[in-house]
Amino acid sequence: MVAALVVAGLGELVRRLIIRKWPRLYLNPKTACFPRICPVCLSSNADSSVDEKSAKRQTRNYIVAQKLEWWRAGVPHCSECALKLSGNKAVGLILGGACTVATLLARRPPELSILTFCYILFGYPAYAIATTIHKGIVFGRASSSIMCVHVRHAEYLKLLAALNPVSYARAE
Ligand SMILES: [Zn+2]
Image 1 (cartoon, rainbow, N blue to C red):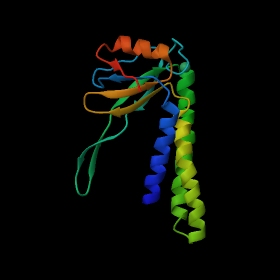
Image 2: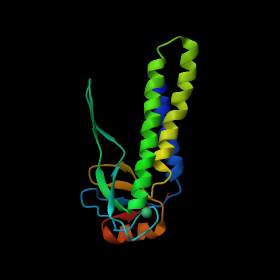
Image 3: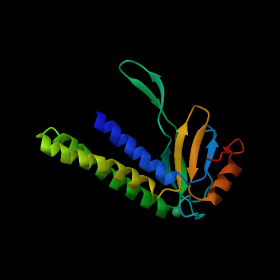
Image 4: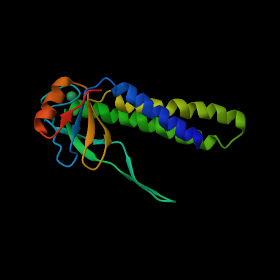
């Protein structure tokens, strides 16, 4: 359980390191619209939609269950980048599956569990890298009225800001 938390934290850290230098914008998640250009390669031929999710937010804490909320939106991408991103997701899922298998194996003798712990430790951040490194846009923390959006290219950020007049950019 503690190991799982450490690994989740490590994956999140890797994700943050990747998007740390990207400019960000705060949008109203209910009214957010996205420019019809690809946020990855800036092609204007953005006819595919890629689902993005914001970070999960815990809204209630019951004794037995936690309520989590997040925002989801389809962002226009060019078909080439959309394909590449879904390929990365598949790699991430395979790594995630490998982690699950490793966790199951961890019930075996202790010398093996140290090895599997290492697998899990490297598997999850690898998943985070695979699913983040080629993205052009990443949704970050969100509340019910505001969502942080990390954008790779400044040109895209400008278009996004123009489309969402209530949004505002904030320096690091
Ligand atoms: Zn593209």
